[in-house]
Amino acid sequence: MVLHVGVHALRSRWGQLRGSADKVAERGDASTSYLLLFYATECAIKERVLSRRGQRDTSALETTHDLRKLAKELCLPRPVSDHLAGLDRCRVTAHGGGRVALADLHQAWRYGAKLNEDDEKKAQASLLALIAWCEQD
Image 1 (cartoon, rainbow, N blue to C red):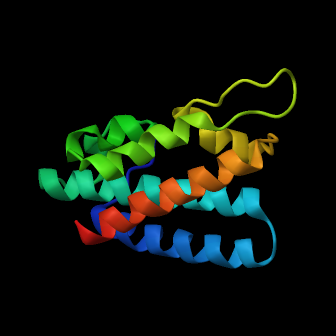
Image 2 (image 1 turned 90 degrees about the vertical axis):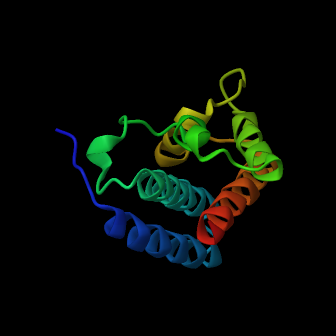
Image 3 (image 1 turned 180 degrees about the horizontal axis):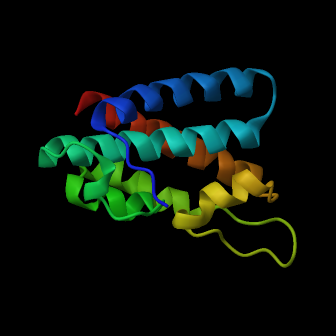
């Protein structure tokens, strides 16, 4: 079952998740903070897409966590779209390494995969930049 939520719920939730991410980061739990930021960004992008389309809820969207795919129709300006590329660069530090695909990044943080700390900080900056763009749009 897929749950569909409205534009207003998405807008409210992205702010709540962003605030929660800040509080969790203050307690020193970086991975959980990044996970919350990922979901805040997802809500923000979905809200912007739906608002621009004039649609009411997420039933109009493909079910995905791929921020690049979601943001594609927003025609993000170059500096902001570059942040999406930065999200594809998180390297796994265990089990032979490798990179985590953007669509799977939330899973890496949700399940506690050990990622390169510098990569995670860059991903955090990218997520914050995307949220800031959504706030201004």
